[in-house]
Image 1 (tube, rainbow over the protein chains, first blue to last red):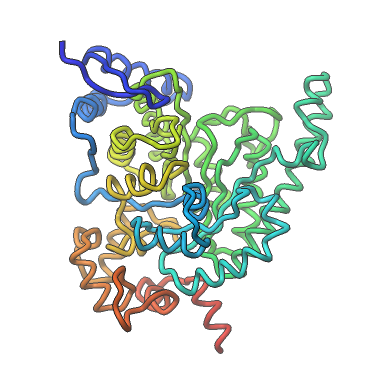
Image 2: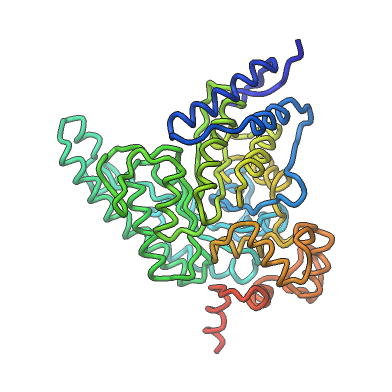
Amino acid sequence: MEKIQTRMGDGIRCEMTGAELREDLEKGTTDAADRAKIPVLTKDELQYLYEIHKCTDRVVGVEKGKEVCLTYDSCTTKIKRAHVSLSKIQSLQIFERALGADTLELAHIDYSYKPVKPIVVFEKPIMEQALLITIPALLYGAMPNLGLYSQPVGPCPNPLDLFAQGKIAEGRASFEEAIDYAVKDMVYVGSEMYETGADGINFDTTAAAGDAEFLAALQAVEILKKKYPEMGIEMGMASEFIMGLHGEVEYDGVRLAGLYPHDQIKLAQKAGATIFGPAINVVPSKSLPFNLARALTYTKACSEASDIPVHANLGMGVGGVPMAISPPVDALARASKAHVEICRLDGL
Amino acid sequence: MGVGDPYGMHAAHAIVSGMGGLRTAGDLVARLQLNRAMRIEDAKKYVAGRLGVSVEDIADPVAMREVREDMDLGALNECPGVAKGIDAKFRIAKLLNLEINCVNKFKQKIS
């Protein structure tokens, strides 16, 4: 029987029969649909996915005319992490002039708003100079990263330690205190960068610390948008599901714990985000057909619910891209094409 | 996008799905997404209309090379006299009827 070459979620190569591949596609879409109470992919979409997996070409691509725009989580970090000795501005130029970037993003290597706050004065001149010599929109990006506001590295008692001691009210109060600190830092850095001339701000890996972090980011977006109505704001998420670590926080009357991307987008849009990035985590022990069908189901529902551009996160370990630091191009190309074409995305 | 080495992540997405940035009109379409929250189809039509070309042309590097040179919107290759940065953005702001933050800051500086 003919075998189809694909990969597992961790990137390891594997072979499946056609029947096994179809079964994993069905399981992946059903898994997402059951969890988020959204429609499964259609038969035609599953057939399309079967065919792009069956295709033996190493690289596939979107149809002509369906090209989308690309945004990044820290262009400058990616060059540094590749051990290329370039300045931040030179790194941005590499993206602009060698990697076909539609937008650029300046960032600090310690990619969270809290550590950026004390060094923002050193980031601003780089932003100023970069704006003079680059052409695409230039964002400043970092993560809300609410975990940095808990002891021992932050000022607030660690809520998870308090929960473990049965101190539920104290833990929630600590989260709420951390939200206030985080909002101030995000608004401060965002304002400083916008006053310097940045085209926009990126809130990356939002809600990694759960519902309290999502609330902090939404509040920061709302404040910045009121302050600077022309500011571009991208909000990229950390995972498909908002963990209810606090459990009770709400935004605009909506409880944040347990929200899936098609509901997350509505709040991001309401707060003032202009681009939203759903992130669907890969299950490393499941096949890529399973993971891709699962990611597409969530992201399609999100795109359909959105009035603003949707740039899905398709980095390592999200959006059907294997959990491997050097992503295999065969797998990435299939995830990229399928997301753009099935979810009618605006970007990646 | 996300984490990964520049070849396997950023170059690969750009080739598979990307508009192409300065090679085409990807940067112009992206500005309308970021600053006007326009979805891709509307943004592409708007840019094509302002450039006076077809929607197909704006993702084509050969067609757009000529358009970008003619309108002095910045080009990839080394070329004397062609707009290199903020000067291109002055023209992009006018072309797209879009407020570009750094262009406005620059005007304040020199006024």
